[in-house]
Image 1 (cartoon, rainbow, N blue to C red):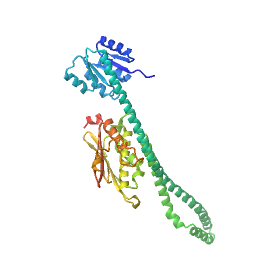
Image 2 (spheres, helix red, strand yellow; image 1 turned 45 degrees about the vertical axis):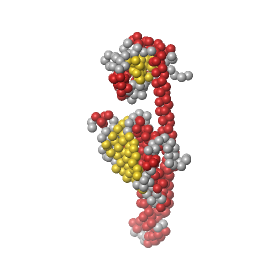
Image 3 (cartoon, rainbow, N blue to C red; image 1 turned 180 degrees about the vertical axis):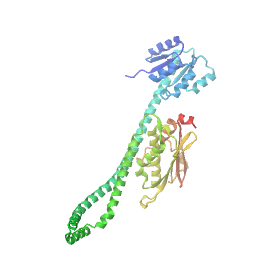
Image 4 (tube, rainbow, N blue to C red; image 1 turned 135 degrees about the horizontal axis):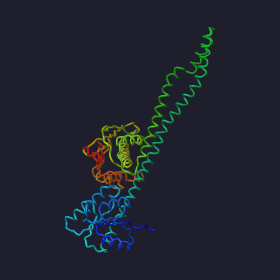
Length: 416
């Protein structure tokens, strides 16, 4: 059974509130009532109504100010606001839309018109919610696709150092098995020498054992095996830490995030994609301020950019011949924005398709090699969810640069 939709009625006239509430109840709506703007904001934050009917002329806080405050609060910003006003002059109508209202109904109102307009905007709200849910599912699908692509590479990245750690550990074990008898013979030689007895026989035995086990080779290779093992374990630790940070950066709430750290993590997570085709050059602003954002979604965007850059280079270079390109990653502050650049020295994007790269499902890859959603979702995340910008600069035969600009939080803007 469908849950009834809730309408918040805000009017300082009690008769209007009663008339609206009773009539809307007969149409199956649930209603909440507020007599002023402050109470309306309180109820909206507590109950998250489906839509708000908001009177303009109210004491203390008028409808325009109440709407402005509602739109500035993350929990209530998406709730549609329909103004009720007895002043239908163009200037008032323009102001109603300017502060975030979605419609205006003139007083004295007719309930048929009120219900019709409510139905339209509630339908639009449902459609918007469905689109947002679909977007969330696409983001998840894109992330799962990326994780699927990364899984084999990460397994390889972990398997390689694990394998030579295992090989070196077996070498160290075999070496110990060889050294143990020789060290036992050395102890016997020392005991004989200390006792003042003839130890020539024991000395010859030690010499023969050392020659048999190739002591010079052991002394040369033993430190190398230890160093390689330590390096391998550090590499595994770095990969595991990066994967853990990447997979746990998906909080549903926006928060301040260190994008330099996010980039470092993403570089490590995607290392198997670029390490054989590119050298990564980093130019990070050490004083880069934190950015108020959905860190997990921004990390996903950065991952797509780095993987795309690696794929562009792989298509251009002869990997078997050991040819490598360059992927450059940089961060800096630009006024009230933080700017991230991801560049590659690949083949570039032809001008005729440059305007389409952010279109959903557009891809130049063969069927089955990509969904065409990566850049479209990147545009959605950066532009629509974070009010930032994403653009591309490309020259055929030279390379491509994607530029992401994210606005700083209000707290940081205030001190700029």
